[in-house]
Image (cartoon, rainbow over all chains, first blue to last red; front, top):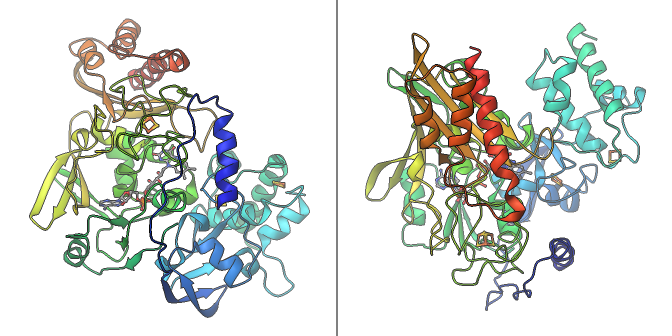
Length: 191
Length: 324
Ligand SMILES: Cc1cc2nc3c(=O)[nH]c(=O)nc-3n(C[C@H](O)[C@H](O)[C@H](O)COP(=O)(O)OP(=O)(O)OC[C@H]3O[C@@H](n4cnc5c(N)ncnc54)[C@H](O)[C@@H]3O)c2cc1C
Ligand code: SF4
Ligand code: FES
Ligand code: FES
């Protein structure tokens, strides 16, 4: 946390702000962490986990359930790397608290394949080289799965706008689009 | 993030009871804004009341218009809504990203915090966050900040697209408190900063937004939303316009022009609306309205470009409606 604050201060400092830094407001008394026993259905498996009420769904998946396929790019809703399906709809797991999802179904990238058989969207990303470094890829793939559920009749022209919530620092956008277009065709025509 | 007492009530009454007498309680809906404000310690509530268990979802249609539940998500995909209120659905679709819209709610969207970078970085002085602390933006970067309705104490803009459309549609928020129900026009929901920028909106402590009511108006169906931003998608407005026009026999009878991204609240351009009434929607009228929309602008050198963007969004929206 303090690391993040330092980095952001440098960023804002770059905007040439002519004021001194005010001290970060601190609460006098340290508060005791509160926890909650939570049940989630993650990738089809029921799990019970004791979570700090402050924990994001993203941190809970990664640090408590050791599902590190879901990535943390920005932790502020700006990149899409943390996309998961929550009760079937794509959402950003960094912008929600785990405690808010008692009983919900969460699908992460780890839950898409059927054993060794890749999900058609995963297959399409591999076939079309829909990545370079791969950091954004799990978010892209889960987002594309959510998109195809929202728009079974997705046209190629709609893909850029409806995938705009997933940034790719390597700018592999051309191949990402091609992969999703292929997956959309496949799902329309039936496998 | 400081810890808090987490509650999930099942009824509006219980939710109101949980915040009554707890000035440090906060509601959370989609959480897409509040979670980052908690993480960055911009907000430090002692109690968090999760309203997702309340029956405040869905649309209810009547002869008078539509009532949209406070928990209705911004991803709302309803052909009737898109036909009756194009400006609203376009504004929603232009906001954030599909993932965020799947969680973000109408109530949370209206009450989201400003995106002034200094507000969100507690290491900088901010009157809106800490009354009397000063305003880091005053001597700082103001490119994204306001040109209308700002004050010496705060120059931030309200970031919601949806609110801009709702003001153009004469919508009202329905609010419940322990003392009963009241209705607030969306145009009166957000306050101008004056000397008290921390008093952000007209809700009383402990009040809950339960719905938004959008009336049936003759101009509602002929309406649109134009938004200029730094990239094609997934960005807040630099300037936007929600525009609605009602004409009879080719002459404008009534119109609404509301600007976004340029003021601490959705900004009704009354002078531009007057420039349209009684006129034909031709190129000269469009130009006169676009110019009138900038009346009263007080830009700083670093955001003066927004004056031209205001002309641009109004011109483009009216031209589009003129072709219909
Ligand atoms: C990267 C990014 C880009 C974005 N781009 C845009 C954009 O282009 N346009 C745009 O309009 N928005 C944009 N947003 C903001 C987004 O739309 C808001 O975060 C969202 O609408 C907030 O809704 P929510 O339900 O998640 O609110 P929450 O985060 O749950 O709450 C927000 C505030 O509202 C209060 N609140 C919520 N519901 C109620 C209620 N019923 N009664 C009383 N108080 C309530 C909460 O206490 C809190 O103070 C963006 C956000 C991000 C992260
Ligand atoms: S412009 Fe407003 S929100 Fe931004 S630092 Fe100044 S007081 Fe705070
Ligand atoms: S980590 Fe959630 S959007 Fe970037
Ligand atoms: S492949 Fe590197 S960020 Fe997308």
